[in-house]
Each structure stands twice: as C-alpha cells, then as structure tokens.
Image (cartoon, rainbow, N blue to C red; front, side, top):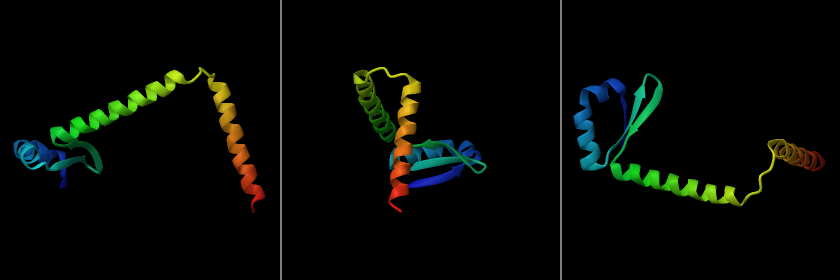
Length: 94
C-alpha cells in the first residue's frame, strides 16, 4: 500500500511511519506543497531497485564499450537524416 503524506506529517510522525514501513511494508510518498519530493520504502524495495539500476547501467556500459567513437556532429546528422526520411515516407503515404 502507498500512502501520500505531507513533509510536516512525516516530521511529526517519523517513528510511526518507519515502523509501518519496516513491519508492514507500507510505502510513503512525501509531498511538500504540490510537489512529490521523496519516498519512504522498505529497505528490500530500495535494494532491489538499486540492483536493477546497477544491472541496467552495467548493460549500457557494455554496449557503449562495443560501440565505435562517433563524433557528436555525425550522430546529429544521422538523426536528422532519419527524421527527414520518416517525414518523407509519411508524406507519401497520405
């Protein structure tokens, strides 16, 4: 279950919120005004998210290591050409 709470509520009830998180797995989204600013989650959730993020970054690093170094200008030209090609094809299909 996820509960949204204000920052002031967290300040006043932190001990209770931590108990509910650790004992019952409850998650909290903390708001300051209209903005969501933080989350309080069980440590197992946090560690799982951290592992998944680390695994994704490892895969991206491996992909990057196998890619040739291409100047940014060339990449931008290729992207612009691909966009132009898609737009051209869409124009013909009408």
